[in-house]
Length: 402
Image (cartoon, rainbow, N blue to C red):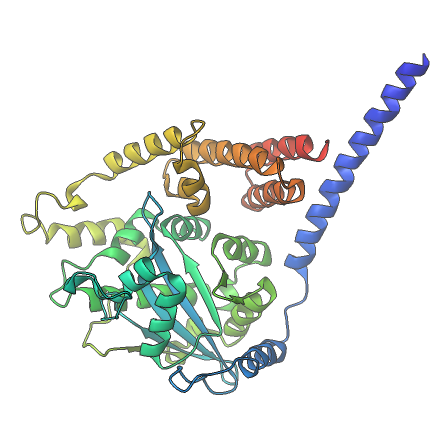
């Protein structure tokens, strides 16, 4: 073998080994986080108390909750396709008492009044959903905490796409669930009943997977955790903390102890305790929507078929992949491909966005690009989608071999 051939062979071996080592390190790091022992709940509480003690509270600030209670503010964000404003369309505080593993869910209807600086909006615009959108998420959260009278220890946000992705992973209805969570016109009381339905739905999901017999495995826990945003307004809930809270609720067997979870609403409204039947969700939602026949404006979008909406969504996602389209970054941030119902189309689009975004990111931050693709591979590996896992690994190889 000639000298130049030996040199090329050595270089090739070194590159291959580098790729393997990098991939092993990436997946080892992710796996270690997933399989690590559950964080002791005392550590979680101490972490919360330390954060509270380090915060300077002004005289008019919302008071902190009692020791042993971890307050998690869950916000459903509606930024639509254009992604310009973040409306807080679902607002729910989960106060988890780690002493007796009870949960109090306090909901705030999105239409609750809120002042919005600089104060020159239309009179009908002054409500919480718009406070988040017009004055920024930080301001909106501060207004929510003022109404609740409690400062959140952690804030978790999720948009349409993340919710749909989470439901799909859990094997729950997707489009029909989202229709149920957004419906308000059919109720005489409107928005407060929708807010109550959202809280009930989240609790029903917790109960469904809150017992030893329906325990969500660690790998899926991590995947669900990765779908939502837990790094909001200066607070970050790490995976160990999220897992500790979930495992604590499972150990308390909340699935068989409904009395451990109670509801409240601020401001208070009289609402009904309604539940979505996961096994018959499509029929239940169809019957609900049928009650609105002829009662809504022709401009209302509720009369559009799901097929029409899906066709429009896919066309939008394909167009946003074009070079120079400003919507590309919006789609990536919102993970909008998760709204696609057809499995093959959704996976095709997901990979196309990951590939393009990773290559863009790699121009300025190789480590971030590598981690982004590694997360994609881990997701497909967890879901058993070997074809797309392989594509991800191939893409990772091109990023590691620089």
